[in-house]
Length: 118
Image 1 (cartoon, rainbow, N blue to C red):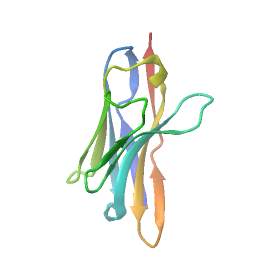
Image 2: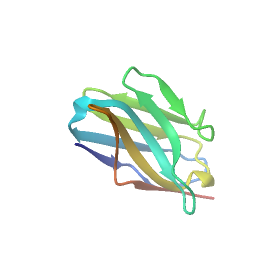
Image 3: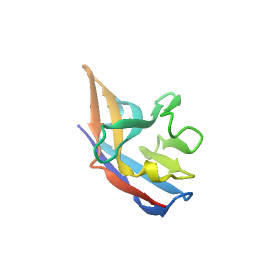
């Protein structure tokens, strides 16, 4: 099992920045992909950014050019730097780890609230 703990959410004004962090523990050797997803009130969960163990990144269209995902393999953490935040970025942000073992499984953190005010 993989346990994920997020930190760094909060309240920020539009145009500001926040940095989210995710720390993994447990069976971390199975992790092949790391990422962030978000869910706004009344909406489904959507991709924010992912980074593969080889370093390849992928971003949701709405955050490209504003958000950056990075990882520290030694510390088993990955961060999401969010710049030029917009009101529509308000959501609960979830840390995600993709694990490959006998099959493939997704693991999720508990979520951290990001609120962007106008």
